[in-house]
Length: 242
Ligand code: IPE
Ligand code: MG
Image 1: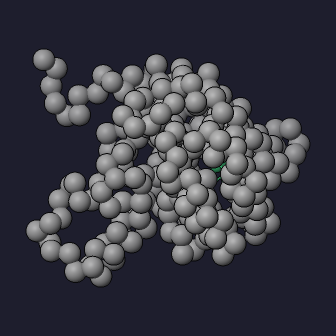
Image 2 (image 1 turned 180 degrees about the vertical axis):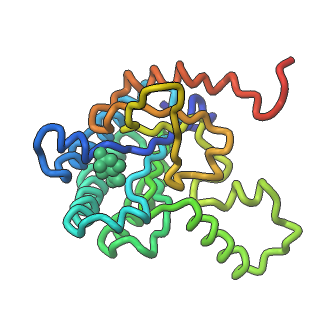
């Protein structure tokens, strides 16, 4: 799918449930993350025929550093492997890769690989794949403020367009739908939503959908169902019906 006219939707996902998926089958947690990466690869192949121009994935939160060293190292190894070994397939699919988050805190070898992949894929005209690594939405705002002040930007230049154009995500390209998988099933009338500081500003007008599916079991079929369910085209963006 060509990306020029940005046909289709921007879909963002909090990929939750890898650990529970592994535990349910008596496997170590890291196997769940391995299965989660496999799901991403399958989706990327299938997204070529789906109405999606941008796919933004929450892969590693700043808060995830709190996990066991073994799990943290394992996740970074998986990410490194994905970015290094699957580049050719991503290139063949014309996927453009952009990493969002605080790159300065990403392990050196992974950072080098990210820079190479971003550069190599920057002219690609297919799907934009944004991967949130070492990301936290409040940290994103802190870095934006710091950059803006360091650059001595005239305060009169700062408006909503300025902010939308200077966040980590591609300028003025906000998700139509944010999905969170691995939601726990609850009985009764309430359901809840926790953003985990994923794209707090960019998701201001997104339709947020929770799914009890664990990320490794997520599929293109479910994504299509969610797009139909969320119906982002029916949003009024605070306006009123004619
Ligand atoms: C999310 O899955 C993946 C990452 C944070 C990298 P989890 O690891 O949080 O899976 P659960 O919630 O323990 O099942
Ligand atoms: Mg979790």
